Image 1 (cartoon, one colour):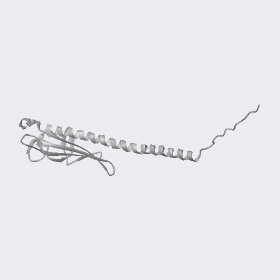
Image 2 (tube, rainbow, N blue to C red):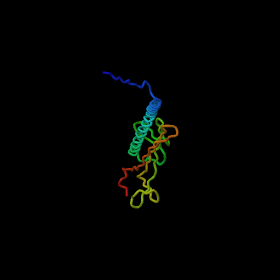
Image 3 (cartoon, rainbow, N blue to C red):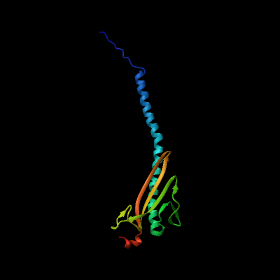
Image 4 (cartoon, helix red, strand yellow):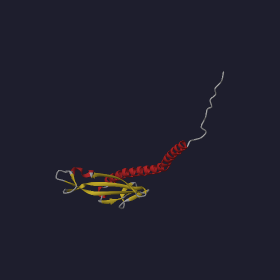
Length: 164
């Protein structure tokens, strides 16, 4: 009886194609990880600034309501910043800045038509209503500007019986 033996051959190395594929996969994975490593802190920084800006927008609206409640006469037309002193809010300057975020509160007259509806022009000034536009702006990166804006109306509720 004769035994037939076969010789198994094994590849001891990578072929050129396998090497090119391995290097390409490594570059893709490494590039993706590098983008995540660099982009993630920048994204976190921008998200933090956006949250601060959102907080300032809410704070500004509450401050304007507080100023209105303390004395309607302090709600004057024009651009304003905010200051907090002696436990009360007040308008201060044309804007204010907090950690690189600028806040501008614009107060303007409100006009109403003969039916008491608010109109943009052609009406009569309502001394007990004001349009308030709060603008919060910041630059998270060079040459990139971000803005949040809230436009609303406030009223002098002390004279509510005078409303049309």
